[in-house]
Length: 213
Image (spheres, rainbow, N blue to C red):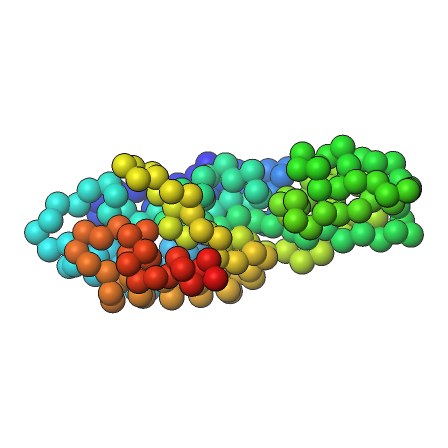
């Protein structure tokens, strides 16, 4: 994993998984997006504005806004417990004419989302995590990549009251992911209370209920 170093001189941390340096499971490059996300914090003058809101309150670890980017649903950089997380996804598509019915895609799916019906694979979209294992296992190109994008996760945290992040979107394009973070940071900086964690801010403002809906 690679981190943009966390210190109390900047009140955010961006973490990426091995996809930034090459990983066989990666669906999308996590590294190139990390630079875009860091630029958002700079453009919003995030650290200075958050420090101003903290006033005389000492900076603690939980004040650091954590962003995590993973290239696939293995999620090595733990986006599920970050304030804002992105997970690389790819949607499998099937070309029946190229399929030999070998079953390699079935064996490659740990979720049991792929099964053989007759001589051809069938995909259970409810079970599929969009990880791309079946695509990489296919030797004929019958199972091939369709749409690519990021799952957008918000509000994860550890601490006294741990909680996994809420899923805001699937297969979001790069520009959509950037816009989501920008909008959320603006709301947090404008309406957050002194010392309020990002997840608590989302709860108070009802943003989680909007996500759930």
